[in-house]
Image (cartoon, rainbow, N blue to C red):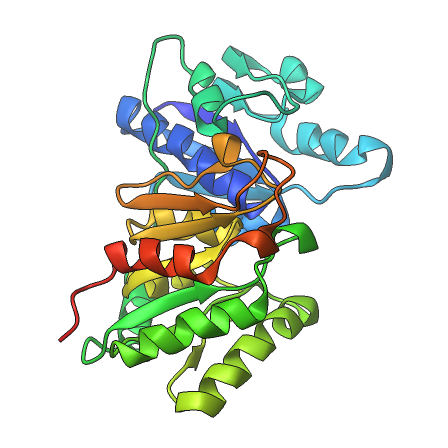
Length: 303
């Protein structure tokens, strides 16, 4: 039985994009036992994957000592294949039959297209999500099928990516008028909660029908909750990539971040960008009407 070491990202968005590589490995090596090494934020995303035997959390340390720790953990096992998406030197010093090491750093073009270089032959990658049965069951209890839900994700990992909260409120109010229940998602921590709170409070004050799903620590549960939503509208973030990978009709909002590199990938993934040069356009310049027009194309029909 083959043993594969898969070294991937720290950030959630990059980890979700990299799941296309993991899914392809599973298709090519259906009986393999896979160990994933990733950052702490992404660990619970990979844990429900049925092919993943172990998740090694790589906590960043001064002087790159986290790589020494990873080597110590992995060097006592022989690996049939090491896939290193981080371009780390540690991969050269692990006992392995084969290695595929991708260079780090940003390059023009879609990130998921770059990751296809992990394979010696041409391949089209598609991100995936995995949920445990109990997570699917809990999600069905939290978001029962008696209502139709619309996911809003008004946060991101830096201010430049964040569409104004008042605009999200306007989109949420219009969704409520169509009979959809807004469900607000955001990451763990007080900073994320503070960014999302104005949207939650405003939508609750206006109509009283809004659900707060932020701060969930289990990404398998978050994915299961997202899959119960009819549409997703959110900033360029890990949650946007998670929604797209889950197959939810997803509209990602882009300003100074580059859609040419990080547009969502999925069966129903779309994006809209603020007017102006890519990489420079302020996201506040993205009009509500433009976002609403594109979101309506993804929403279920009224009634």
